[in-house]
Image (cartoon, rainbow, N blue to C red; front, side, top):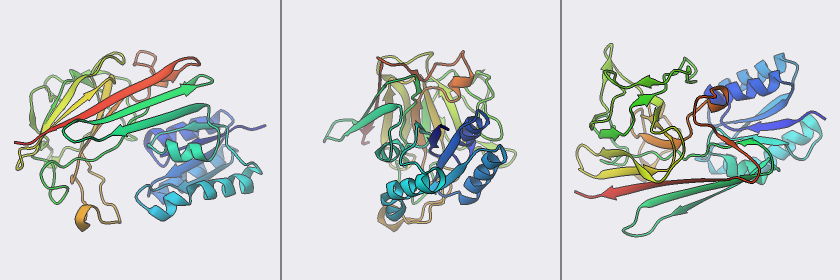
Length: 307
């Protein structure tokens, strides 16, 4: 029987490549996308061109209707396309694993906890177990604007990253395999500086992994940021060997945000602790395979200080 893999966040980048690789190896794919429906349809067409079957489903956690109906829509698609009630495997690329796992039995059983208490850090604990070898690289995708909650941009925020190297990417935002020192590049944040950095007259848009360590380890300071106007500070502490810096250049959500604000490019930034992306194809990267009997345990804390 053909195996069906649910791939979340598969309209572009690593998710797209993952879906295509599964199809090329003889698997069928149900994929989710956030808002790029045209990109998702293109991926489905590419998969179908290989002779495999594929469907695309919207999973937008900011849209209550599409989020709440996801399980029902997924099961209907499975019945219509494969005459099946469940999928076989899950590859989670976009933080939608909890919803996906409610709809079927993936090989890994994951859980996460978020603790929020007065005068204590914002703490994420992510855990997972597996009954077979599974890729497991969990993170979260919170946006921060320490000045005004997204009314303005974050380009004058100061940022420090404890990373001596980063991963250059190709046109699809996939790491090229090079681990490049940050010395003398716009990616050197070892001393705090503004995010504002122009290249050929345009703001440099960051969406790269910064290399903190060669493996998961004890909780340590990875990054520090400060709002230019508010003076509010944020520290990122994590057990993970990498952190993805994303400066929100693609932000343009259709729905309003906090207090009715309309977010735009560079309204917020993300710091996403993780194992280095594309690890399965780069044996010299920290690896993201979770083996039977192992427990994945990832802790991240955001610590805030007022001026």
